[in-house]
Image (cartoon, rainbow, N blue to C red):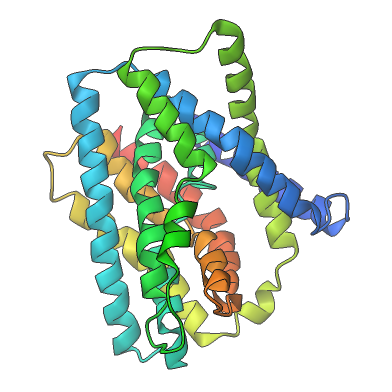
Length: 315
């Protein structure tokens, strides 16, 4: 357990580094866009692809992959229904932001943040299943979220064609390439593979520094004064992960790695993508951006605790 805790502290110390260099203007707010592009267009796709094609295909891997995909789909369906009920019961206001709150509670950053954190803490095997979980997450973010954002609004039409087009992003392309290589039992030439691995290894420190830079420019104290954002934080960062764990444990036939991934994915903070989709639809995304900042900050505490607990519980 000391080894796991050490890994957690090591990767999250990079968040502190990112926070400091942002406040010192070494990496100002303007640098965030370019750092994110470097990760999302180059290093993360390499990490996703290599995690898949390096895997040995076996009946157990196929079975567990199927379980993760179905489990992730069930998670998003149940979490969405739960969020809608909560938002309506507690009468979140204004009514026009109903969809924003539902999406904020339900979406999880299991790609941008989930990939590097999972790989650093749990290793390649668990990371592979997190990548598979993220495939369903992408379908949810680009296919379902645009519809949810319309809740409480009569003046907005979801641009599904554009959002479905965005679903074919670099990470998904990397996943597709990885799956094709896995099925065909083909790996890139040694020199090419080494370059891919080098770029893949950049993702962990790069992503943590980016998160630190993002937090450095956030006005957390002002965000904490918002009643509904605090409620979203409680449900998304505490209630849903705990309920997910309790639910998953009732399905003992699921592979241990599958159960771990489904639970751990639910612990991640709100995803960044919905804010961009909201802007695209002409909806002010300030509230979503604030939720992302606060849940990301809280996750610096909850993720290490969850990772340590899950490692001890399942292994």
